Figure 1 (tube, helix red, strand yellow):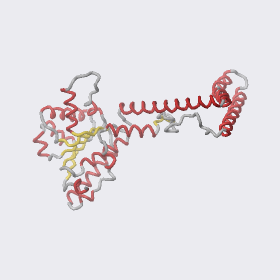
Figure 2 (cartoon, one colour):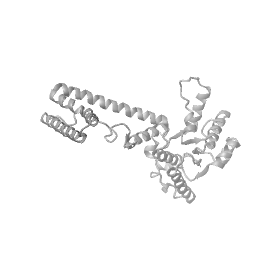
Figure 3 (cartoon, one colour):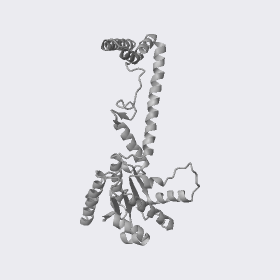
Length: 321
């Protein structure tokens, strides 16, 4: 697992808060019960001393096993008296006990020395939120990607099948240190965003940190960092583009291209390539247009270090509407 430390901390703090709230609420309810039912308060006071009794028996010498058996019998008798009392009063047996969202880990996030499934699920959900995918993951997945829309064009159909297979393979075998990259090339509406979203969703669900963002927004963040007001207390929004396990840049070529954005793009690509950190880049530009717009030091990396997937055919998005 390689969840981002920020998302992990956010979710763990959320778990600690809800655990504390559940226990505080239970303590308040139990205090009311003890006030209203003195006999229950006495029983609970005796039950709460069981651990101390066990410690005393274990360290006092003599027939320890006999003493422990007496303590167990006394504890069982008190527990039954408590149950019978609450039943007589029509009060649930678990009254005054914390009600946790997850009874397995009791909202700690861990059970049996391992991360509980509830914590993993919460971190996955947080990662989906912070990844930049927004509502795309609700409708776009490998299962919802249909190659039927490409059937009227044999070349487009073959390309779509190939893209689906290679993207699914990339996601299901994802390794954050593999240095494997994909370059999705094709006109608008041919499935690039759908498949890259599907990759992101699968990779996140496998426990990795993904950032999915448009080229425009990425360069906007770099602009704010470079030219905006400097404040040591403000987090560097661009760090995530270098630190995440998988970076997906959508709509490369739609941004206003200038020396600054080109320099930023080169920095991202070169840094991640040197660190063998995977990337996926989507673009509506053809190879010739990419070479015309960007410097050789960028295009040589795009066409030398990325596996290209070419999307052809008619606009699928418009045909779905």
